[in-house]
Amino acid sequence: MEEEASTKQHNSSSLYGFLSKKPYDPPSWASHLNPIPSHIFSLGHVPTPIHKWNLPNLPNNTEVWLKRDDLSGMQLSGNKVRKLEFLLAEAVAQGADCIITIGGIQSNHARATAVAAKYLDLDCYLILRTSKVLVDKDPGLTGNLLVERLVGAHIDLVSKEEYAKTGSLALTNLLKEKLISEGRKPYVIPVGGSNSLGTWLSLHGVCAMHYVTIYSVYVVGLVAFISVLILFRGYIEAVKEIEQQLQTGNGKAEFDDIVVACGSGATTAGLAIGSWLSEWKAKVHAFSVCDDPDYFYEYVQGLLDGLQAGVISRDIVDIKNAKGLGYAMNTPEELKFVKEVAQTTGVVLDPVYSGKAAHGMMKDMAENPMKWAGRKILFIHTGGLLGLFDKTAEMVSLVGNWHEMDVPESTLRKDGSGKMF
Image 1 (spheres, helix red, strand yellow):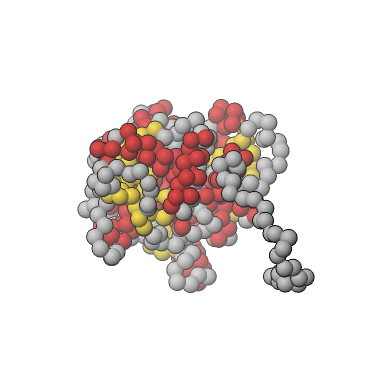
Image 2: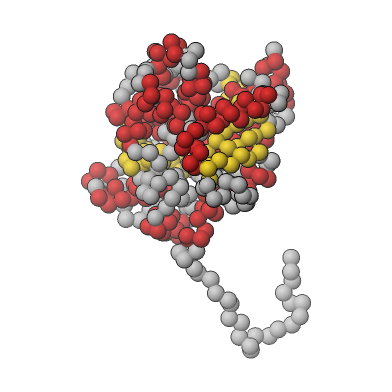
């Protein structure tokens, strides 16, 4: 009854379905996967558009198209919206009054969570990792931080060293217990799911059938694992969306390949299993922007096993390393690439995810042109534009194109001629 009342309350405050809570109906080809979420919140503007991307220097007869998940709405939250639609429905169903999540100082996921939580009248608590010298200082208003602080998120800073020693699960659990002691009802969203599940698999080496046995000992790990399964449902649903767009679009646009950035792994896993189960059967190519491919193959396999999918991760996804200097760190070559793509095509890539993935894709095309020749490729732009604001000092030398306008002395001048609006 409480959940039904909550659903009615949220639905009565929205028009045309936006911000409404509704039962989740999975694609028919994914209905056998377990667990299946019961509800979803409509947080994004979908379907996001698909258009041809006029990238230069492609192999012979190769086409690249762009799925614009950067235009999903909710303050430039990109693909994070798809995941939060499931997670926040779960939070509301459990009666939560606040959300906890964790990430880097410029985490797109953290900012998206802060905005989505406020849409649903939930408080948001963010644990953000930063450098040791900045952990006790005001974090400022650059990029994602500006939006997070504008919407009233509570921010706890932790040093990278403390994060590495303590771990994301322990840190979020500390904050959770503190809030519970204050009478709050927090719901924890893990850091993109990747750290928690990666630790789970490497420490215990178990498959999904064993989770019930060890549940009583490792409750936090299981809850994080279930959250990751919910996260990755968002891109199973996205495959259904793309299928429908292909059927209703002008002309036949069958894609041979999907290319995406791999940051937490949930998006990659969702696209891979979705494409494999559907009639589409496009090959998924993921470019990792943090951990190495072997880690992500194991991580994706854990998700597939947890859903009883009956498939090997390496058979349905090709993962390549594109992390460069490391997560959220860029080489001058990568930033120059982002600038040149924007200048050539009008599409602005973020430097952390899609920028690195597109750079990795173009390098692979240059090195292995026959692999990509004649292929029709769908690149998923996962968003994260605000991350560029953290790179302005590094990019200032790349974006000149300005000077003071030369107005000759002979030009007729009269006060008041130029009206100021």
